[in-house]
Amino acid sequence: MERRDFLRAVGVGAATLALPGCVKTSRRSIRKNKQPNIIYILADDLGYGDLGCYGQKRIKTPNLDKMAAEGMQFTQHYAGSTVCAPSRCCLMTGLHTGRARVRGNAFVPLEPGDITVAKVLKKAGYSTAIIGKWGLGEEASTGIPTRQGFDYFYGYLSQIHAHNYYPEYLWRNEQKVALRNKVEYKKTGYAKGVGGVSTNKLDYSHDFLTKEALTFVERSKNDTFFLYLAYTIPHANNEARKNGMEVPDYGIYKDKDWPDPQKGQAAMITRMDSDIGELFAKLKQLGLDDNTVVIFSSDNGPHKEGGVDPRFFQSSGPLRGRKQELYEGGIRVPMLARWPSKIKPGSFSDHVSAFWDILPTCADLANTKTPDSINGISLAPTLLGQNERQKQHEFLYWEYYKWGGAAFGQAVRMGDWKAVRLIKSGGFELYNLKNDPSEKNNLADRRPEVVEEMKKCMIAAHTYSPHWSLEDKK
Image 1 (cartoon, helix red, strand yellow):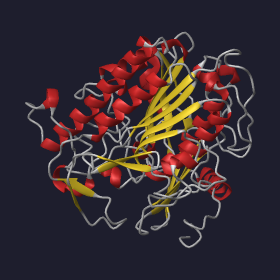
Image 2: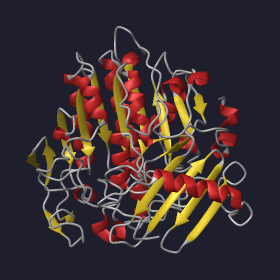
Image 3: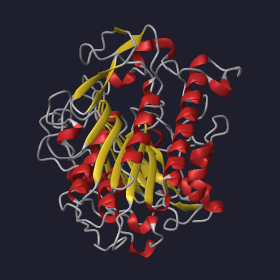
Image 4: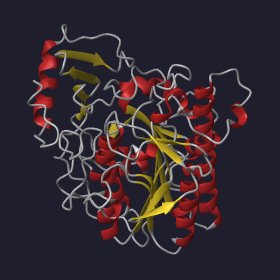
């Protein structure tokens, strides 16, 4: 896709999509003699419109914009869910939320038999590391990273602990590593002793994550490695209330006539962008750049927390909704991919894809077998410009459960059609994303035949879970 087609592609869907779980990715060698290193960078609550390459005018993201110019930009990529934990579960396991173990933002750990990206790549000979926010298993549970295929872990286990950018400790593998921060813990309603606010703010966790990432790449330069770099920026510290956008300084935004939370949000994103630039520089310094695939995305849409108003920067871009909503702004996310000499610079893709496609993509890039039981389809053909070989989803599916039972919902995308079912209220909405990417015109009453097809997809995609049940909500 050429750049002049970008704005058109923002709203136009693929003509056809393939049934999740029923398509087998063709096996072929990406590089017969050498597997590429793979780095997957995940931002936290970064909206579709928060990067310059996606239309952002006020927040500066020169390194990610350069990544887009040197690689491929996806215009119709979707997160696994509209909130953190289930989205990350979809990313790691290759399953959509109708089948994933984690379907809501609560403490449900992965289990020993679960497939993960790390397990697949470790079996293929990769050194594997996660640095940052995990959220799929608490201390001593079956879900901790070192029991799910990762050789090395540094960061946060709990998504509530990860709210705090100045914590008292981070985890290294299965041990706590003390920081100099002193924390006043708050009552969160989730767990005791994890959510809080620092009273001295000395050690900024994001900077430690970047340092660990650079160190891991340095010591792995002679290995083939997979790095999952799960940053917490720009999530708010919810326990800080009015200004939860914790950052050491506002940087280039300090003199802006903006509310402090918006200065903090912009400073956080630009800080992350700068650190990603450092990572690219390290790859070049070590001679790893040409054989390293780097993918960047976000776990869901922009938040309205810690004093932030997502409308200030138009963080959802042209899309409706935000985090915790199943509209496009809550689940459509930026995705960039860069692999010098393999991915065409300055290219765009309007291929409709989602987080559960990342596992088979990594398996394909690593020239190893994709598990049969997942929902994802490899994006490797798209990345390598072999669009005629790219298989499609028949539909994409999401479920959302808000902790405590406050909200339940389902969504389906099939071709240009998008359906949202708000279970608690009984509402069913239908939108044509080609003509209405902002989801303003509900066509459910006018297209009952499409509604029936979408309902069939919802029934087919949802499986019973002991942790989350739609059965009680119908």
